[in-house]
Picture: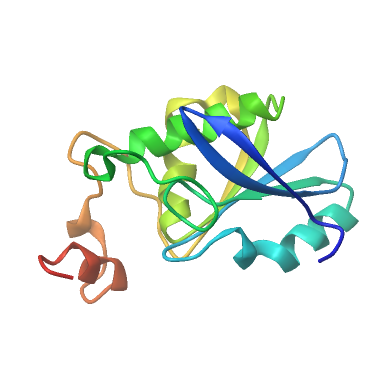
Length: 156
């Protein structure tokens, strides 16, 4: 873990905490789930770096050591996709493999759909592909009792 480098970058007016390891020409960007931080990916980051990739993970806005947006209630998944693309820009990364878990899977899907030229591939864990659209997450397509549905219930 001591080889993982930490920094902060300015992205869309927010300071984001970034963890990186490896120097390969191909990049794997890890997108954490809820309520996690970059640390969830530490073992995978080391493994992909050892395989010759540059591994990057960051704390999404409002998580871990990253800044909170000034009006979080106005944020949406398009903002998260734009944040990922802006992060890639700030790190001089043209294209990356996106690996998303849970909450991070939605960001990976959104980036792949809205900015396919920036994506080498997408791997997601815990969430099936859902077509992004104006209605947001289509909860009716998820299996009955799926854990994500609980977070959509008022008061949870």
